[in-house]
Image (cartoon, rainbow, N blue to C red; front, side, top):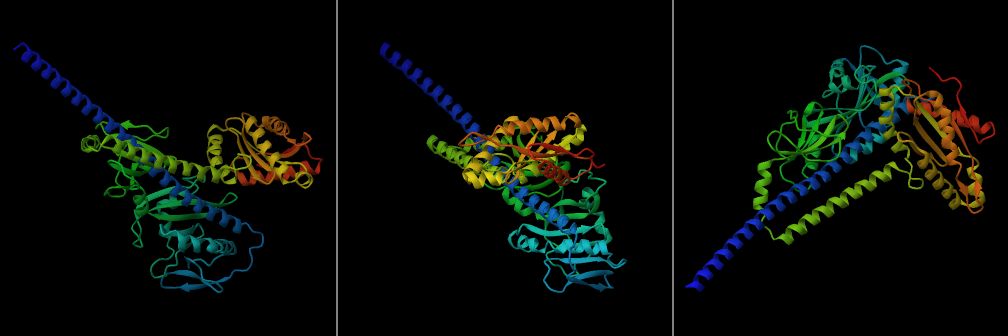
Length: 511
């Protein structure tokens, strides 16, 4: 009897222990599954947001290239003869540009109420010069609905080519959101804007517009724009596997894309963050991730509903090793994708020899620095330097030694740079430094300190010192960065003509 009682006690203790162990294991597995599911969702979200960011950046660059090329062709001193003729369409009250020697990718139409002036013809010719870029852009970018330029001079260029009966210039185009938001009054910073979503009038579905103003000096010419199909963005929100919904949120909390059924333009108010990727919780207990794609205009967000997470954790009954393998695989894939995207970003923005910014990286980073200088009303200086007699170094010591000199220069420039400075290898042996200053009078002393540090570079073997010449200019209010760099370049030429190994600074800056 005593043995039986002891056995029952031992059995009860064993059953109780096993029950407690099962509860503990079940609780641990549930907690582990909850944690793993959140981590998997975060990893997928990072992949999706990185792909969407790269996709948007690619097309933003495409718009910027069109803007830059248009401005370049417009500013040519001798643009050449107009290779097109005008045909009037009285019924539509517009004129159409007819190509005489080539097939245009798009359609030019303008108001017949006024014949094109010489300046308008110059602008039309500058726009038509974009055809060489627009043909391949339309051929290889199926996600692009339209590429177009709307001029303040009452004409529009629209690609792909569209019959006059379907679309032509109308004054009502100036009432469109992208024109209003990109124009001088609403956009004095001349930044690229994003508008949408809205339904394409030509039946190509829901689209968003990337638009950038075009200026010739301080004269507003018009807006170059690109319309993107939302369905490709919706496809990118479905890459990989994650619980609940990844969405693209625009300005004013408008819903642009989602990996679930949705109505574009609906408004949500998720918690948004411009900082590190962290989970945030709303009043309903749902968790959110967010990251900006275009500052203050476009975010990728993910809503992880509490009910979805709990149900997924309960259904997650695979063996632990399978779960670990899948989580590890997803983590490795996400890590490799992020690593590849990071490498691509570094390659496209950084000079591999000097580890300084390249031109593309400088222009992208300069937008933020220019905005900061304008907001805080601080002067911004442009320093353009190059190595004296660099060709002689290459010819005498070989290109390997020349590369060593440039690499050393990059190290010294990075060592002396201040937090806000942007340093770029402009090309060859030329370097550009953008310096945010407290006072404009400090520009020359700061520039000279940078130059002196850079001159610690040595030619090896022999420990031969190098010297640098520089040109310095203060960015004027409303002045394009390229113009300031051009003025600094003029001062650099003056420094070289004056004996090299010095910095020249314009005594009187233009107003």
